Image 1 (cartoon, one colour):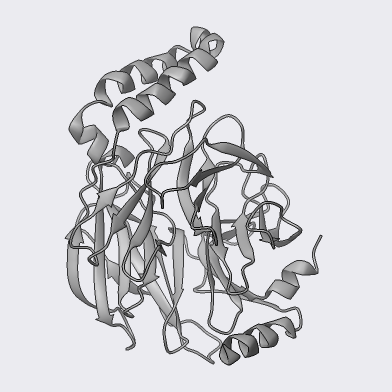
Image 2 (image 1 turned 90 degrees about the vertical axis):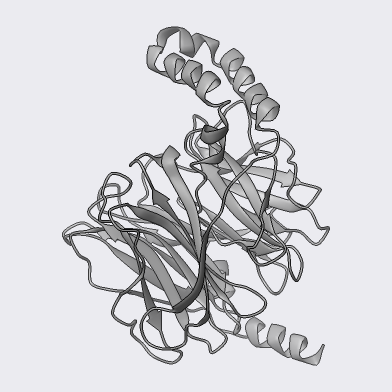
Length: 392
């Protein structure tokens, strides 16, 4: 109890602080979809995918870098995973309660997102320079609960809601008709589920991993209670508006789980849904007041009970990246401050990955481009709650 009080006091008296740097010099490659963790030693490790493109580029691989505690610079990038002649994308890092490091990612088998195969690696030894010493690797075979009828009921509601649009949009109408047929196939339902954001622990042994599909335009949760030997899956998080993807899960003090999701559809607002049974089934998908231009968001619970959310909060473009802070578990967001604030077409910061370190500081990595600088890189920002509270 005393250590907890001292931790909260030390956090409370910190002066507002923001430090940032790029992990490696910008280069004429596509560097995107980063993830960050802190090790038990206080080091930081980040990963991202790197190549000449995304799903259609067979040279894409997962790269990583390390920043030692107390050092000012990141190591040179090193390879974390590479499936020969296939694009490897959407990596996620996580350190479980046993101290094991996990890397989740997808290998895109047919250069289409719907053909993505979900994979993971685990390492106990990852403190040395260079890549971790992977001791286990496997594929996660997804089998969502009740895709039919739950998802297809939502699809039917979408047809009714957007009937006038479908009358004049033949391409969209054909897509829906094809999905109504192919979407019921077992292989279509079980392939193409992709990672994006950190999993959470619902208990000491039950891990909850966020998944989504660009075929079905909805989200899902995967669960393991035996450290990856077996997996079960939730019912889909789906709505008549479709397009709620890339879920970030946060557990409330009540035990309910909230999913914050990217908007891949018409409303252009962050989507949110709540589960009262630990993520197995989901209530209605709601639209938040915070705008979203079709870009990833992440929300985490902090040690003091506050929630921190990071997102691109524009209707169009990823040129603004903003931190939000809530002291009532996401009911309201009293504080916000911009990590990046470019004019449109002047630069971008997107696809953030957010953690809180043991010292209370927040760390965020994200894809970064800037006008006049050739190529892209991954940027790292370190800041505290008081820095956010100095904003609006």
